[in-house]
Amino acid sequence: MKRISALAFSAALLALTACSDSDDAKSEAEDPAAAPAQQAPAQQTPAPQSAAPAGQPLSRAQEQALAEAAKMPRQGTVLELMHASGYTYMKVDVGSDKPLWVAVTMMRAQPNDKVQWGEAAVMHNYESKSLHRTFDMILFASSASVIN
Image 1 (cartoon, one colour):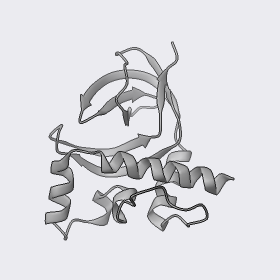
Image 2 (cartoon, rainbow, N blue to C red):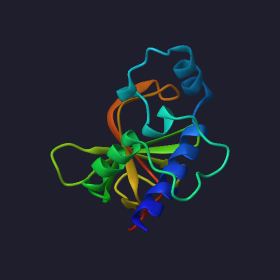
Image 3 (spheres, rainbow, N blue to C red):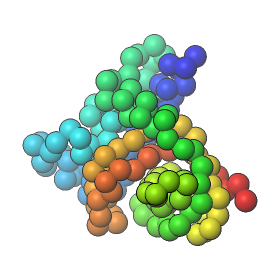
Protein backbone atom coordinates (compact mmCIF):
# COMPACT_ATOMS: atom_id res chain seq x y z
CA MET A 1 0.00 0.00 0.00
CA LYS A 2 2.87 2.36 0.83
CA ARG A 3 4.43 1.70 -2.58
CA ILE A 4 1.10 2.41 -4.31
CA SER A 5 0.83 5.70 -2.42
CA ALA A 6 4.37 6.60 -3.43
CA LEU A 7 3.58 5.60 -7.00
CA ALA A 8 0.46 7.78 -7.01
CA PHE A 9 2.48 10.69 -5.66
CA SER A 10 5.14 10.07 -8.29
CA ALA A 11 2.48 10.24 -11.00
CA ALA A 12 1.24 13.52 -9.49
CA LEU A 13 4.80 14.83 -9.43
CA LEU A 14 5.18 13.88 -13.09
CA ALA A 15 1.98 15.79 -13.85
CA LEU A 16 3.30 18.82 -11.95
CA THR A 17 6.53 18.65 -13.91
CA ALA A 18 4.71 18.29 -17.22
CA CYS A 19 2.69 21.44 -16.48
CA SER A 20 5.75 23.54 -15.71
CA ASP A 21 6.88 26.57 -17.66
CA SER A 22 7.67 25.65 -21.27
CA ASP A 23 10.99 27.52 -21.03
CA ASP A 24 12.04 25.08 -18.29
CA ALA A 25 11.36 22.11 -20.54
CA LYS A 26 13.07 23.73 -23.54
CA SER A 27 16.26 24.56 -21.67
CA GLU A 28 16.54 21.02 -20.30
CA ALA A 29 15.99 19.53 -23.74
CA GLU A 30 18.58 21.84 -25.27
CA ASP A 31 21.19 21.21 -22.53
CA PRO A 32 21.82 17.44 -22.37
CA ALA A 33 24.89 18.06 -20.19
CA ALA A 34 22.75 19.35 -17.31
CA ALA A 35 23.68 17.63 -14.07
CA PRO A 36 21.15 15.05 -12.84
CA ALA A 37 21.11 16.75 -9.43
CA GLN A 38 19.59 19.82 -11.10
CA GLN A 39 16.64 17.93 -12.52
CA ALA A 40 13.49 16.97 -10.65
CA PRO A 41 13.29 13.28 -9.82
CA ALA A 42 10.30 13.02 -12.11
CA GLN A 43 12.18 14.71 -14.97
CA GLN A 44 14.88 12.05 -15.11
CA THR A 45 12.49 9.72 -16.89
CA PRO A 46 10.14 10.73 -19.70
CA ALA A 47 6.68 11.73 -18.51
CA PRO A 48 4.15 9.03 -19.38
CA GLN A 49 0.91 9.93 -21.14
CA SER A 50 -1.07 8.32 -18.32
CA ALA A 51 -0.42 7.16 -14.77
CA ALA A 52 2.12 4.39 -14.45
CA PRO A 53 0.65 0.91 -13.99
CA ALA A 54 0.38 -0.27 -10.41
CA GLY A 55 3.45 -2.28 -9.50
CA GLN A 56 5.84 -0.33 -11.72
CA PRO A 57 8.87 0.39 -9.55
CA LEU A 58 9.97 3.94 -8.83
CA SER A 59 13.38 5.02 -10.05
CA ARG A 60 16.15 5.27 -7.48
CA ALA A 61 16.11 9.07 -7.79
CA GLN A 62 12.35 9.18 -7.16
CA GLU A 63 12.68 6.93 -4.11
CA GLN A 64 15.48 9.12 -2.73
CA ALA A 65 13.48 12.33 -3.29
CA LEU A 66 10.48 10.87 -1.46
CA ALA A 67 12.57 9.43 1.37
CA GLU A 68 14.38 12.72 1.97
CA ALA A 69 11.11 14.65 2.06
CA ALA A 70 9.52 12.13 4.45
CA LYS A 71 12.01 13.25 7.13
CA MET A 72 11.04 16.91 6.81
CA PRO A 73 8.27 18.89 8.52
CA ARG A 74 4.86 19.03 6.86
CA GLN A 75 3.60 22.32 8.24
CA GLY A 76 4.74 25.81 9.11
CA THR A 77 4.03 29.53 8.85
CA VAL A 78 4.23 31.31 5.50
CA LEU A 79 6.91 33.99 5.46
CA GLU A 80 6.78 34.83 1.77
CA LEU A 81 4.97 33.53 -1.31
CA MET A 82 5.06 33.91 -5.06
CA HIS A 83 2.79 32.67 -7.82
CA ALA A 84 4.21 31.61 -11.18
CA SER A 85 3.24 29.23 -13.98
CA GLY A 86 0.32 27.72 -12.06
CA TYR A 87 2.31 27.11 -8.86
CA THR A 88 2.54 28.76 -5.48
CA TYR A 89 6.05 28.92 -4.04
CA MET A 90 6.03 29.45 -0.28
CA LYS A 91 8.93 30.24 2.02
CA VAL A 92 7.81 28.58 5.24
CA ASP A 93 9.08 28.89 8.82
CA VAL A 94 9.16 25.31 10.10
CA GLY A 95 10.72 26.10 13.47
CA SER A 96 14.33 25.60 12.45
CA ASP A 97 17.01 28.20 11.78
CA LYS A 98 16.49 27.86 8.01
CA PRO A 99 13.11 28.37 6.31
CA LEU A 100 11.90 25.76 3.83
CA TRP A 101 10.64 26.46 0.31
CA VAL A 102 7.55 24.48 -0.71
CA ALA A 103 5.94 24.46 -4.16
CA VAL A 104 2.36 23.34 -4.76
CA THR A 105 -0.25 23.85 -7.43
CA MET A 106 -1.71 27.35 -7.23
CA MET A 107 -3.42 28.02 -3.91
CA ARG A 108 -4.64 30.98 -1.87
CA ALA A 109 -2.44 31.83 1.08
CA GLN A 110 -0.98 34.92 2.71
CA PRO A 111 2.07 35.68 4.80
CA ASN A 112 1.54 34.58 8.43
CA ASP A 113 -0.93 31.83 7.40
CA LYS A 114 -0.20 28.45 8.91
CA VAL A 115 -0.08 25.83 6.15
CA GLN A 116 0.33 22.08 5.94
CA TRP A 117 1.21 19.97 2.94
CA GLY A 118 0.92 16.37 1.87
CA GLU A 119 3.54 14.00 0.54
CA ALA A 120 6.43 15.73 -1.13
CA ALA A 121 9.63 15.16 -3.05
CA VAL A 122 12.84 17.12 -2.51
CA MET A 123 14.62 18.81 -5.35
CA HIS A 124 18.07 20.38 -5.05
CA ASN A 125 19.34 23.31 -7.13
CA TYR A 126 15.98 23.78 -8.83
CA GLU A 127 16.04 26.60 -11.37
CA SER A 128 12.70 28.28 -11.99
CA LYS A 129 12.81 30.06 -15.32
CA SER A 130 9.53 31.87 -14.66
CA LEU A 131 10.79 33.27 -11.32
CA HIS A 132 14.34 33.82 -12.58
CA ARG A 133 15.88 32.18 -9.53
CA THR A 134 17.41 28.96 -8.30
CA PHE A 135 16.27 27.29 -5.09
CA ASP A 136 19.04 25.48 -3.18
CA MET A 137 16.39 23.04 -1.95
CA ILE A 138 12.65 22.97 -2.49
CA LEU A 139 9.84 20.53 -1.70
CA PHE A 140 7.33 19.78 -4.42
CA ALA A 141 4.23 18.79 -2.49
CA SER A 142 1.19 16.91 -3.72
CA SER A 143 -1.21 19.32 -1.98
CA ALA A 144 -1.32 22.05 0.67
CA SER A 145 -3.91 23.89 2.70
CA VAL A 146 -4.21 26.78 5.13
CA ILE A 147 -4.90 25.54 8.67
CA ASN A 148 -5.54 28.85 10.53
